[in-house]
Image (cartoon, rainbow, N blue to C red; front, side, top):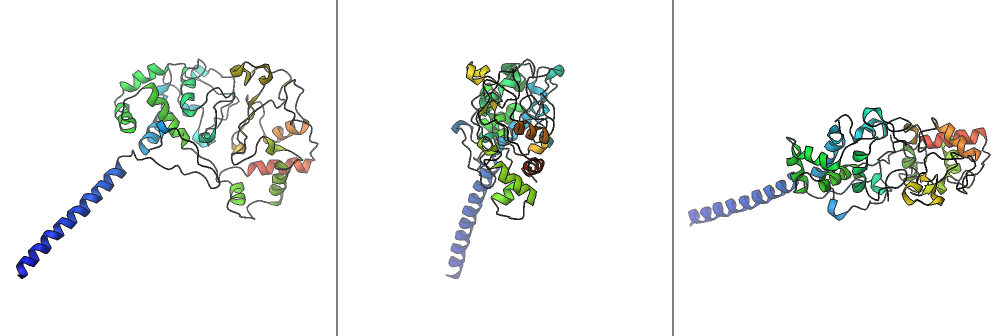
Length: 336
């Protein structure tokens, strides 16, 4: 009787351990595939971004996109990558007035940061691309940038020793125009910024996070005296609109009008985010201003006369102390 009980206990124990072990293996397998949909870690106080159903984030997709982003294989002569104009150590800008492509070819415009690109309703200074996915091909095919062809990039990737397997792991399909653009967009959509002194003050409620000068600058920024918030409001310090800020009397670059062909859009450019603005000089769509002080003085003066200049751009008559306070506030938008 005792032997039978021991035997039953032994059999039951083996069965229980087998069930536990099988379940554990199944869980580990699910974690290790890298294909489970991830929840992006957005900064405190930020909304969760919209993500296309056909390009949900996974470890494999983000890792593949990052590898492609830093790989010069995307350019005709394999000399530059996406990261050539979007340096991680420069908050994904390049420090140049205008971006430079292969053979030192200069573009028309300054490299915008891609941090918080997940929230952008359209891409580029002129809003010429509606999504992160569709914008990927533009620099690849632009003569003054990578000067190549998406389908030729795909051919290179299919002949590569590593990429075909990585694409299959991420998208269950080999390299194609579809998977290439989605992989890079997936990586870019995972890049956030939002850990500045301002965020400590605003979202973590640390009242001592800002100095007296920085608080005065903040009051100016969000008040009717300087009116910065009308264009640079919200969690990302942009309203995502297009404005003519009176930078020139006559614009060599027509801006938004290149896309819409509308006369009323001449000289209008996307309102950029001001996060990390102290680290992303030079400024304006053409990198024509070097310092924050120069930028503040431009808006303080009311800009240059232009038929399409925004009604918000007018002389502010700020004092020297107010201008200094405003610059000090802009500097606290830098991630720590």
